[in-house]
Each structure stands twice: as C-alpha cells, then as structure tokens.
Amino acid sequence: AQSVAQPEDQVNVAEGNPLTVKCTYSVSGNPYLFWYVQYPNRGLQFLLKYITGDNLVKGSYGFEAEFNKSQTSFHLKKPSALVSDSALYFCAVRATTGNQFYFGTGTSLTVIP
Amino acid sequence: EADIYQTPRYLVIGTGKKITLECSQTMGHDKMYWYQQDPGMELHLIHYSYGVNSTEKGDLSSESTVSRIRTEHFPLTLESARPSHTSQYLCASSAGVQLFSYNEQFFGPGTRLTVL
Image (cartoon, rainbow over all chains, first blue to last red; front, side, top):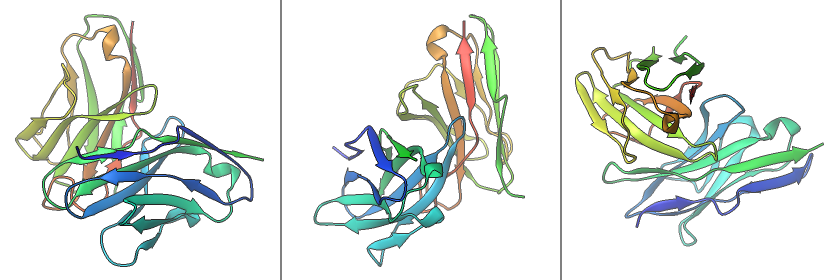
C-alpha cells in the first residue's frame, strides 16, 4: 500500500541543537516529497519539496531535507533549532503517476529554551 | 497579494443547523481541496475540485457537500450539523494541470467548527 510515515509523534530538542524530523514513504514509482509546517491555529505552510535532481533540498527558515531513495526516506533537518521552530510538521508524498497524495500523521516539534 | 482565505475562523453552532464554510483564493488556481483535520493532527481529504463545475469526494467519507461555480470560490456546506462534525476544516489550492501535481498546495488558515 502507498503511504507516508512519520514515526515520531513528538520530538523535543534544545535551542541551538540540530533537529531532525523523520519521514519514510512507500509509493509506486518515483515520489514527489513535501514538508509542511503548521503553527497553532493556522493552516499548513509549505517548507520545501523534492521533485528530481539534487538529493539535498533547501527550504524556508533554514530547513533542509535529504531524499534517500535506498532508504525511502525524506528526513527534515535544521542545523540549529530556534524556539520559534516549535510547531507541527507534516511530510507528504505523491507518486509521479496517478492522483494519490498522502500526508503523514504529523510530528510535534518542541524546541526548549 | 495572492492568498487563500477562509471564513469564519471559528464557529460554534447547535445540532441540526445548516452551515457553509467559505474558501476563496486569489491565485487563479484550478485545483482546490478540503481537508478535515482531527484534534490529533491527522489530515483527511474530504473533497477536491479540478476546476469550475468539477467536484469529487475524497478519501474520507463526509456528509458535507461542495460547489465550484467560480474558479476562486470553493464553499463547503453541511446541511444538518452534528457533534461528530466537530473538527478543523482546511481549504487548499494548487497550480498545475494535474491534481496533486509537483506544485505545492497553499492552505488557508482553517475553520475550527464546534457543533454542540
């Protein structure tokens, strides 16, 4: 079955430390991969996406993600976390064929001052 | 400024009432979507539209209905609200020819609905 998984419901990290939010996927064919962030009482905001090309993708607010085809992963990273990064993070995937699109269940990131 | 709007932001209403959640976008996108977001965060697609006069039901069964008479407008209606409809409703739009293309979706701020 095609899907996307975020294995951690909650991630806590100290301010200034590097952060990683994990995402793995399962789709037929090559994927389009996305990360979105949701702040309290707001809609989702696009952070970055992988379509093709360089496996390391850079996005908004200093975030980046690495596409790893062999591990079917697309983990979100940031070298130095800020308290303002505390939010919900959603990974999403679409196969390059068909119309199916899948959001992960979300990971709540808390950056501790 | 190109954006996507939802009104109302918050709505508390009694059982049996008819409600319409408004969604408008100024980006000229053909593709529009409605998601229902559980209190626990997960998003479920309930409706989508390829363009004017085109609407489809999504993955999650919903008692709501939608219409798409104008490109910019994609309202969602509940004919008779029930407590089980209490949730956050997110509207989104995207550019491109395909549904869920490689283009990202733009989301509105959401409507938090509570049915008493």
